[in-house]
Amino acid sequence: MAKREFQTEVNQLLHLIVHSLYSHPEIFLRELISNASDALDKLRHLTLVDDAYKGVSFSPRIDLELDEEKKTLTIADTGIGMNEEELVSNLGTIARSGTKNFLSQLSGDAKKDSNLIGQFGVGFYSAFMVADRVEVVSRKASEARAWRWTSDGKTGFEIEPAEREFPGTTVLLHFNEEGQQYANGWRLQEIVRKYSNHIAFPIFLTYDKSEWDEKEKKSLKKRATEQVNAASALWRRPKNELKDEDYKELYKSIAGGWDDPLFWFHTKAEGNLEYTTLFYVPSKAPLDLYYAEYKGGVKLYVKRVFIMDDSKEFLPQYLRFIRGIIDSEDLPLNVSREILQQNKVVTSIRTASVKKILSELKAIAEKQPEEYQKFIGEYNRVLKEGLYSDFGNREALLDLIRIKSTKAEGLTSLAEVKSRMKEGQKGIYYITGGTESLLRTSPLLEIYRRKDIEVLVLDDEVDEIVFAGVDKYGEIDLKPVNKASTSEDLKDEAEPEKAEALRPLLEKLKATLGDRVKDVRASVRLADSPSCIVTDEEEPTMRMQQMMRAMGQKDIPALKPTLEINPDHEIVKKLLARTDDEVTKDAAWLLLDQALLMEGVPLEEPAAFVQRLNRMMSLSI
Image 1 (spheres, rainbow, N blue to C red):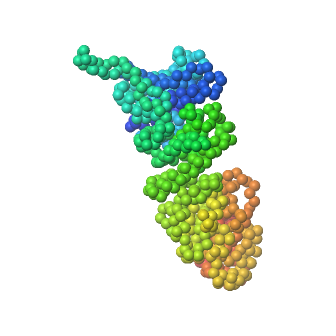
Image 2: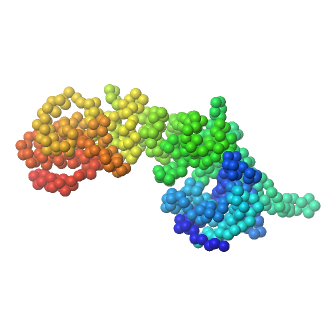
Image 3: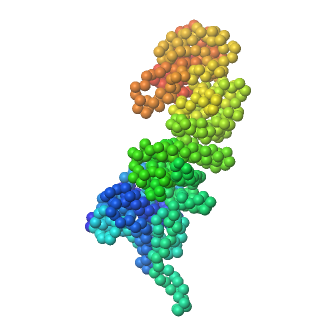
């Protein structure tokens, strides 16, 4: 018998699960049955498409056997099984690095923590909430040898050869004091029907059943075996036969969580293509939604045969939070990821599914605004990614996202912003490039405040990139306030005269700043600040240039901003009247540096900035 140590993360995980989740220990059975169902799904698929497995006898079932006297429960399946290497890999280590994030997120709040278990694929370890010893005997299909894995869930595990008549896996739980409440046939039936009634394979329970004995005139216990689940694909049943609880319990099994879903959309398509989709929106965004290793996607079935559980080809990346099932009648059973990427059936299902999800969300936004706000609180940012990647659905997404604004508390829709536009307003204006507080105090907004024009405050990290490619909402132009051309909308009749009067100073400032700026000109967008920077329409903003360099694009040319000067500001008027060139030179650099700082751009020469500032302060003290 080989004694082995658990991986460090497994030790941490076991300790935290056992000590954090006692409020909901019954989920152990849901997780173990779900694992058994997955093993059956995999073997059924292989027997249909893989020559190496076509000769394997496949009689799918899951058996629970309770021994009340010994306080043990056995969960056995006739699925794919595992060999020695797979037992060690699957039960002794955690390959997925995201699980480390799972460990850091466990809070001690039982309901919250139990909702994380299934998300990170560590459901097997929930068995140690109710058992002080777990034995797993498994024989891989197409292999003759079986193996036994044994552990007390504390320090490590042991592996040794074993016997098993048929391929599959048997998990034997020796209940601890906490788990003894589940050494009860009626209680087990209740848990199976609550969490696993939809499992497509029959689940049998063997237990001591109390029956009335007419001869003895008393209730006697007799060994009985009964099927305890409906064993039907819930998503294939008509919607009018299903209750909300049916949908919720299926979701919990799919997502491996405890919370109810926020929404679900159930569709059966018939005609040229026949398929069923059942999509769920989780009530909370997955913790690893923005991690590179995030495993999104929906479960794919073909003619009720499970194919894969993370088929990303059916939904775009910005809808990766959607959980659920797609069951197609038209795809081949031996479909692979490579085939999925080029298949016309997949393209048709994807197109229809995306439109269905977005239209359902729009209906919820209109009819259930409070519920929609909960959705936005979790998924607004990821929806915005679609504006960049899904041009065909951009208009629908623009209606669904919510943004901050200078005219609304909290978040608002673009439709509401459109309804508040002033007469003669030439577009919807927005500002990007930093935190909300930085954007709201930007000099670029001053003239809009004075003219009582609404500006969108786009402070999400993705906004700078996403909205750079969105130029219209319907027929209305979307205009960034930090682009030079936007000022054309704000000009009045007095502007040319002011610019002409300022020309001598502008020329001095331009000569001083040289190639650090593209131009220096009079501004029509400033009201209270002396200066600001803008970029040309076709150029990335200063903030965007920073982001591109941070993402590794080192060869970006140093684009020059245009410095705009407020002709009505006291500092500018005094500079216009001065003849001291040295003071004007210091002022030129300070006007540029303060404008850069207000944009969140770090200064190239902080020491030179401080020296100039000190010289200017000495003149005023």
